[in-house]
Structures are given as structure tokens and as C-alpha cells.
Length: 115
Image (cartoon, rainbow, N blue to C red):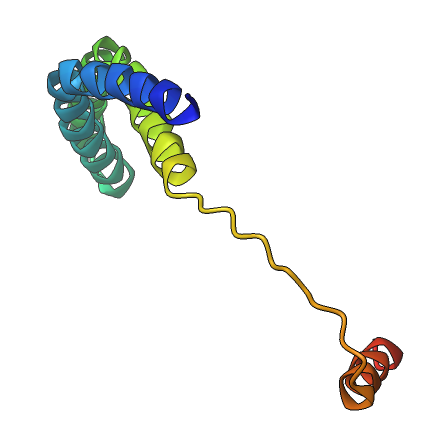
């Protein structure tokens, strides 16, 4: 039953992620151009260069802000990652046998003393 719930959550997250591919690409491209414009603005020495890169940066900031619904796609990707981790989580119980072997008991006590 737990795997079925994980499957449903994963399916919903993957559908949301696929529907947000366009805005995600737009966000990545516009953020990269905005970063480039900022770096050129900082490097510019002339006033006209700073004004030009500043206007370009503001335009790219508006374009980047218009792609903010892509954050939903990023959240869906994170949920899909969490579902993947939970799906592959294998719980293996370690059964320790008590033995009367004095050498094993000695090793156990010695490791407890060294802690």
C-alpha cells in the first residue's frame, strides 16, 4: 500500500514537472542572461555602458520574474527525488546472534572500552 501511495505522488509530481518544462527552460536562460548583464554592468566603465547594461538587466529581470511559476516545477522535481529515495529505501534488519564464544565477547567488550 505504501508503494502505491509513492507511485501516485511520483506520477503527480512527474506530470507537474513535465508541464513546467517550458517555464523552467525560460527561467534558466533568462537567469543566465541576467547574470551576464549584471557582470557586464559591473565591468562597464562608461556611463553610457552602465545605462545600457542596466536597462538590459531590468528587462531580463522582468522576463525572469515572468517565469517564476517554474518554481512549482522545481518543487515537483524535488518531490520526485524524495519519492525515488523512499522507493529505493530497503530496510534490512540485522539480526545479531548471541554466542557463548568467549573470543567474540572479548572483542565486543574491547570495542566498548575503546569508545
